[in-house]
Amino acid sequence: MPIIVNLDVMMAKRKMSLNELSEKVDLTLSNLSILKTGKAKAVRFSTLEAICKVLNCQPGDILEFMDDQD
Image 1 (tube, helix red, strand yellow):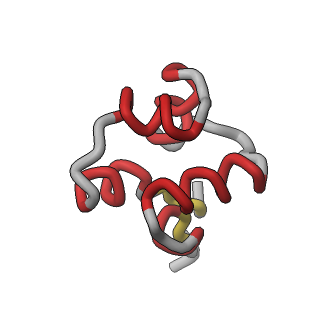
Image 2 (tube, one colour):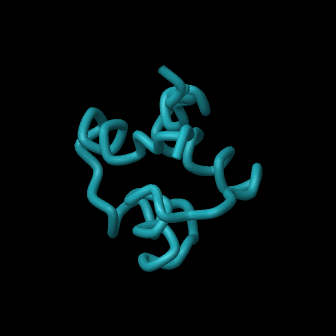
Image 3 (spheres, one colour):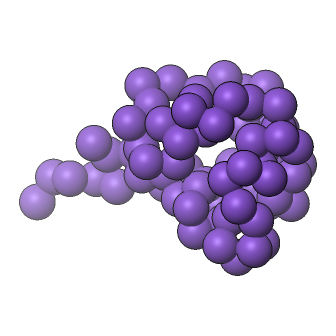
């Protein structure tokens, strides 16, 4: 998949657990885990905005485009 989710990297930089982020973003632990592992098919802008506010980062810090063409 050409979109890479770096949520775990940003959480580690901010020393924040999945449980803590889940509570602050008001998202279920399972849904946040799906996003963190890159298995999500979509993400709402409101969810991305909330995550960026809590982690004090930009959307580009969490989502990365990786061109898999050689």
